[in-house]
Image (tube, rainbow, N blue to C red; front, side):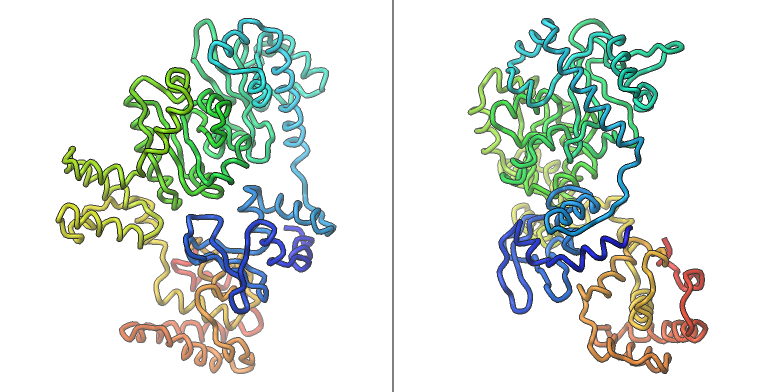
Length: 530
């Protein structure tokens, strides 16, 4: 990453930056606030002016001023740096998008404009939209279009000198020398934008003839369905303001809900909701209402989505519509007010299951579902509280309920990734004695890197001043002193483990007094190696 960013960090005051977004209260030498990145009833978000970092002790997120803006604005770290540099008048040179990708974005925008202009010329496509209740202002807002002729699009691309580079997106297919077919020919066009508002691909809806009802742009470097939510960019301000999202299944559900004033509606692009989608939502909302179709497929999609959302610390509210009706159909039949009433009266997933148990509806299945979903919760204390409530309700011992919890592969992996006591002592001693070590060069696992960074930032454990101020003359003596300090929080039964670590690190440091090379660390990495 360019060194200019280091200069930008030095110029920024994290208190000023964060205060532009949320209200901070002084707390001793630091500042505190309710965390903007997860549901937070009592302040767990702290900003340290002396260290120029923020840290939430509720959800664990932390970093510098640029990272805060990146998370809050839902943009990349580089884009956040660019915004802050402009805002504070700091000169910043950042490697731009590759010229090829930059050209693709420009061409996609021009193609979207071309499709939009063609919609106005096609009566059949306009009638279809009007029959579905979509008005002209909504057509303009979502820049809906129509593709009627491959020849006209090909000519446009030739005029832009962009036919070859656009063909790499897969949105046009070469059928002969110099001849291309538009993938979306004879379809309504739905431009799909990323969180920065750039057109990255298209959805196409067939309105007559044979073929798949919907198709999307092929996967590419800039079009990744697992990272995109339709309507996210268009509704970003409302998502932030309302702190909730209405997750629906289709493009026209999003469009119809936005038109009716429910502008926090989003949808996946014909795929199941995955962890990337849930992560994207968790940056701006606290609650997610699942308005999936009322058929069996919709209920199955709901069951698959809930674990991903819970793992991101989100509150999940299943909203059940009559079978055979999607949100768009429901609005056309019952109206916006009726839909809002259904949404607002829906309990969260645990409240829903609790109601079924109290009423005696399929109790065994509901208990299983309850423990299954609790297994995915990010907040372990809240998970335990919910299990305690379930235990009182069902008179099933909490130990039995805990044993029934579903152990996900991800949780098993997390357990495996946790550092052992020995590895923590080794890593902490190494970093305290050799603070010049580059974490990137050590190639640490994610868990090890998090722990190492927490040591450097003093986020989880305070490093005593006399360790920080130790001289570097007698290496062995320094490490002995470090270990003595480390023993403060070490359980008695684990004290014996320090002996082997001490000898290993002492030997390692003796051999590398002149400097530590990344290649020399390999012998000692163990589980630290990724």
